[in-house]
Length: 304
Image (cartoon, rainbow, N blue to C red; front, top):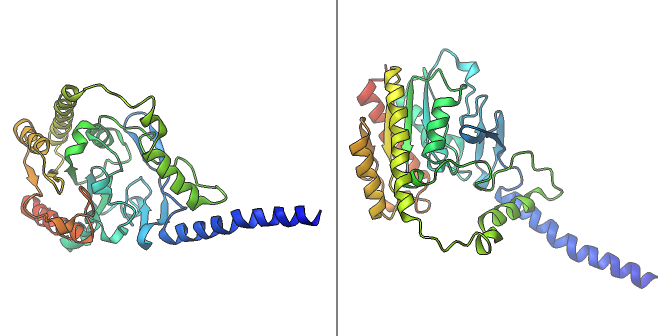
């Protein structure tokens, strides 16, 4: 009996000790308390309102009272002029960059005007359809004075993404070992076993890809046209990847030819050391982009 009890305790400790150590380490890294998202029938999904989480590299991620990434609540600043950034994860900034170090926040800092607030409506995995529909149909976002769109080549052939697209949590992570379960969730989403079995397609769909690019440009152009007719101020920026490709050049050429609005290219100001990976910026990149955008705001609107 004693041997069985000793054996049972040994097995529990063998499992529990490494599991606990792993949990502690992953929490130290910044996992375990992810940003929560809400689904939406029109624009797919968006961060849930009123969140403040400590994430990777000890970075704080704050979602305000209308679902924007910013340290400022909109309803407490109704007298302020608002600038809203729309885009994907490049605009959102990732969980490894602190709220006060992403370019949407730094842009308003560079304007040096306490009457301006910047909000970030960028969301991970958004495509052009999500970006446009969020701009058009998110009724919480109506009192802005300037809308800034940050476009990335991948956005044009993603289509409309929903909350099943990536590793998003749709409710609080209340598991016994939340950091471990967040890591498992990320790995299982990225390396979904279905992608190697039933979803491992041998179809050739390149032609559809270019059709989707054209359709995305039409949808984007319709939104820019709508905003300008409504007397909204708009700036559009194009952010290429670190390794430029022919399809990226094609997309930039198409949007320059088909969208009746200036497209401002980041290519001349971004260098390799400003990227965290192939697409996203590191802290140096965010600082550079913020300074550039703030200058363009002043040039185009003289901050009025």
